[in-house]
Length: 81
Image (cartoon, rainbow, N blue to C red; front, side, top):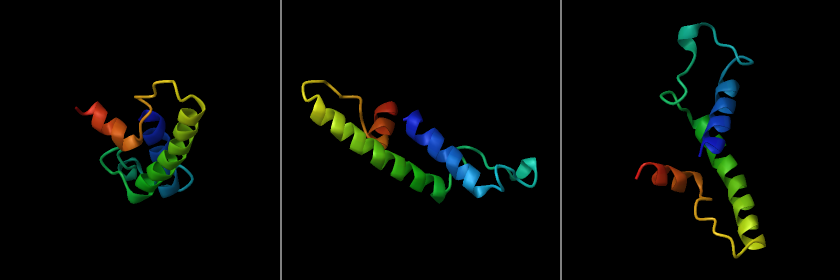
């Protein structure tokens, strides 16, 4: 799930900043604690694209076992079992 969450969050942070800069260090959001709607929407979009890739691979290689090629939320559930 790192390949989905980290780039999506970094892009969200960048968009919420002034060209990657904040007024002061105390204005810089925490990576996880200050997660915003922009970053959440980025995750949804990236996961949607990843789902298309996942489906195409499963169709192209139907005999392969892709049991760990999951959506972001499925990966989160698996990681926290």
